[in-house]
Image (cartoon, rainbow over all chains, first blue to last red):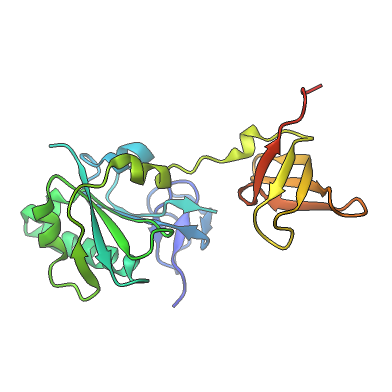
Length: 64
Length: 159
């Protein structure tokens, strides 16, 4: 299975077939990412505040 | 209510699947306005902590409800994980800004592991440095990632 892509700008994870980040519209995507955050309630999440994530979704912790 | 972090033990190598499955369940439940979906705030998988998934929620009961019935979930660890213990894995501070030319570093990964070297060039944008190996009998410039080195001695003055 092809590895999913992570946006280098906003760190959101998208399917491997994606070409454009649906969150920020960027095209700088990478298959080299690690860690995973599934964010369901960004308004109350301490992790989301720390990492500046504002939308629910799946994010990488580190994107190389 | 304040966020608390709970550790859940999973089958080794299945941490991401557990997070994805629980995430999908939360999404499904959200349409039904379930209490669990809004109570679980985030799920954190740290690659270096094998066999554990961390749940951010106001109490242990909602975590227990959210993970129930999953094949790869073993059990919930009693007690709360301090946020500081998770935070250090989330904020990856690069040492590239601290490195300057002529610093002596030790290589911590790759074929030159444990060798000492002197910094000859720093590429901040790419987080790479070019180093001269001190142990080599001739001048050998090598470009490596900053995460693969450790500062041993700072250069004396920047003049």
